[in-house]
Picture 1 (cartoon, rainbow over the protein chains, first blue to last red):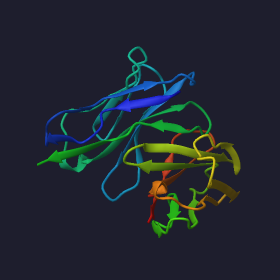
Picture 2: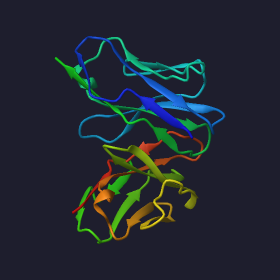
Picture 3: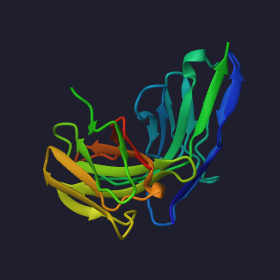
Picture 4: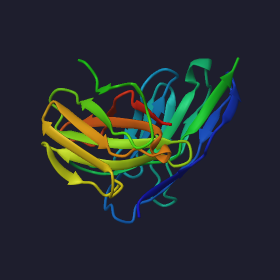
Length: 115
Length: 113
């Protein structure tokens, strides 16, 4: 089936250090996978961080970047310099392109950025 | 624009009781999804509707769980004869007709004692 495997938390990083959260996917039933990173900040609901629908493309938001690599079936989330406000739970997700399709999520990585 | 609204935010129910969770999608969104989140299993897909019609309920436990979408402004998830293993955060999400980005509510935390 379709699945996502990601770094599972907790992940602790000092402020201004770099971050990478790994994500790999298996899309056995999806011809054109779309890849997502969602984030849940403390006290808030789950929200989209970034999305990439085309292999080889990079998505970015709030200083985070992720590149859709079809060869390695990966979609790692990176940030060059994290801030305390980035502390949250990050989820990688996989979905089919098109109308209102369901997403398959990784188990989430809880990031804590220490000052 | 209001986001996805879920009620109740917290519910404690006794084993064997019924629990009903409500979801109001974002106005104009035609797809509604239900997920269940636990520490062990993570985010599990349960079911979804498009234009109020059930499309995929492959994640729904075959017994005791049911979902409906009687109109475009709300959906319900009902759990009959609740069991302790049903304790979880139930998330509702909606998306507009032409896309696959999900917009989530804050969730309903169900505790079965």
